[in-house]
Every structure is written in structure tokens, then in C-alpha cells.
Length: 362
Image (cartoon, rainbow, N blue to C red; front, side, top):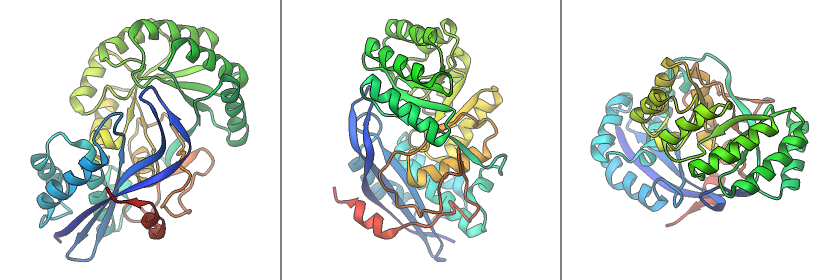
């Protein structure tokens, strides 16, 4: 079997609510859809998120990278030799993990379809059904956030809720207090700083939140691994690393510095499901915990496969917040679990009418 064509397109899908972080705000999710075709008629589909201008590669850059560099490098190769394909991508376009990620997912989808096995079998086999979900509280006034927290815990039964911080420490504490007091211990709260704090701000704000109670996890409050290690020594709440980790060397640094006890894996910043599996093995060997970012659509499907196959991937991840999806409705949470499909490859059907509707020309 040989790769005959690799194509990419940009989709823009509306969010249910505006996403506000320390980086800025956005109303739509921009994403890249990758298709790989072969001479035997087997195809693979993959997806990569676009997080620019906040970080990572732009949609325009990813399209150019895939079409002008990765497609020529992979055309004619055996798609079943996924490691060789990843090496070819790295030679053709080094250190562009965002561009690699959707292609890597498509290769695994294709290989699973060719072998007739679900993706989790290619990642080591299933150790659990899939991924545990947490709720997400969108940024707003303290009273509105408290009301949302109460409602989604009562409706969905979430045991962990995530909220963004890293904007203004005083306002962050006020919002956290409102949420924690409304929950009354019914769920833990994960706060995500997206590197927005300086060390002194993190020390003050996070200590205040700990004193209020109900704090379950602190995600990447400061930029540097060194400063996260300081916070980890000063605070009782587990620290989660996100932006501090791109590749295996970063994972080793976080472990060596004892900067975090949980790590958030994102396929876009690591280079695809294969890279997440490799980094997950490093954290597993260090007896640390992983959370796999869902994002949306096929990325969420692949996240469920990864969580099913990686033993230490036990920390929950926020449910998707898009207003629509091009993945068939059969892929949906069962309570708090997003189960990995059992069909070949990613194991889901796509709505190509929706894909055409959300495709944009750049």
C-alpha cells in the first residue's frame, strides 16, 4: 500500500460560548482537517486544532506546511510504517508539531482501518473504556459563574469543574470564591492560569484559593518550570503542567524539577496521538498522572482512544463546548465517560455536509 494523496482544509466552527483565557478571547474554533488516500482505496482522516494567535502555528502556516512539505514527503510511502512516516515528516519539516499532529492522526486512522482494529489497539490496547469528563465554567461575573457551576453539577453530575484564571489575581479570587461556596464541596475546581501569573501573583492568589477550599488542581499558573516547582513546594494542591511541555525533553525537565504531578497532553502541541503516547510513557514511568485534552470533533475521538490505552491517563478533561460537530451523533458521552469507539481506526462516521458548510478559504 502506498500514499497517493494528502490534502488539508480549514474549518471554522462556532463555539457555544466565548472562550476567554489569559491569552485573549475567541468565538469560533479554527481547525485543520487532513485526508490521506492510498492506491488500495483505504483512507485516513485526522484533525489538528489552530491556537494561533495565542500560541502555535497559524491556519495559513499549517495549510502551507502540510501541502508544500508534508504531502510531498509522504507521497509514495507505506502508510502502515507509521514510525517511518513520522521520521519523514520530521526531516521535511522539523519542530512543527501542530502541522504534524493531524497527519499523524490520519495515519493511525488509516492503519486501523487497514488492519480492522480500533486506534486504541495501535496505542497499546485498552486498559479502560475511555476518558472521564469534567465540566467547564465560562468566564463571567462571579454570580453567573457560581450559578453555572451549580447547574452543571446538578444536571451532569461532574466531580470536577474547570475555570480560567490568570487575568487579574483579585478578580480571580473573587470568582473562585463564588464558585467554591456555591458548590459546597459537591465538586472540586481546577483553575487554569494559561501562564498568566507572575510568581508573586500566583503565590498570593493560589494561597487564597486554597484557604477557601475545594481546589482540586492548579493548571499552568506561571510560564516557567522553575516557578511551577516553587509553587509545588509552597502549595498543597497538585500542579498540572500544560504549556511547559511540548516534547519528551520538557517532560523530563518537569519530572526532574518536581514541578507538577499531573500533565495535560494536547495532540496539537506534541505532534499527534503517537507523540502523546510516547510522552505518556515517560510520565507513567515517573508515576505521574495525565489528562488528555478533548478539544472537539476527531481530536476528542482520538483523546478517548489515548485515555483508553494509557494507564496513567486518569485525570478528567473538560467536555467540548462547540455549538456543532461534524462527527456523527453516535459518538457521545455515556454519563461522565467518553468511551473510545470500537470500530476500525478512529471508529466514527463523519457528516460531510457539515464539513463543507464549515470549510473556509484562506
